[in-house]
Figure 1 (tube, helix red, strand yellow):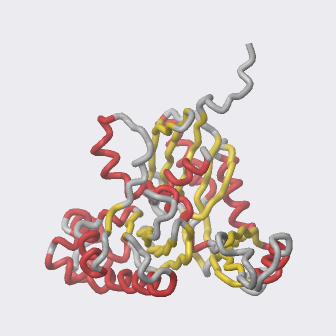
Figure 2 (cartoon, rainbow, N blue to C red):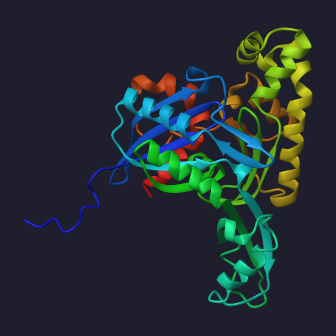
Length: 350
């Protein structure tokens, strides 16, 4: 008997998100068109030692390869994950995003023209980066006198080498590296043609991504994150960092006292959202999606909704993934912080 095709055999993929203070791993399996959550796990850096998994120095990302691999092996062992094929996310702030236009030309001429133009936009020697690009106006490109609008992403080769070393030390097969934003887009959109603004609110930075009809239009990072909020609370109330973290998680913007303290930082984020909408998708944005561990700040969703008079919601990355009903409460609580990891795992199943 000959089956002829194995496309219906189950396939599993790992999505790995190495954050500043936490590593998250998601294992998703696919059988035909059905996707199901097989496993997940995370580890905070303070469990192993007194420093973050990653740091930024002079615009360069520094990864603690041995410590990260140790943490990954611990997660995989604890959760009994056996899948080896993994997609790793790359922080948006360590990648170079840029847009530019090229004059009308044929599709055959485009790759060479993009390569030439890209050299003007990347602040590193071209031999030291790997880049990818896409046409933003695919439907109109090719029409007479229609220029091509290009989105380009460049990643330093040194960073790629660091991730390859982490995968090797973790005994994993690195199948793909992808910027965090594309994982968030994949796990955020309810419709491929949606126009949304997606926030990734991390420990050190917040990235604001304008997505028009499913295609990234802009990505900008600002130095406002959960850590900054905790520091502001600790300083304003003259309390320790641990107590500040607790008050932030429990009260957030629902507390009048903390709202007064945190509003200047949150308004910086709101201002950046307005700018992204005005520049890249005026009148088109349908909703604001909040992701990242700090998106769970009490009252944040409501504050942004009121400030922008626009539908605002937390990301629900597991919405298209089957999981046991008993996990409903856990999934809802952890969802916003797992947007990138889920997006990476889904990429591995494409």
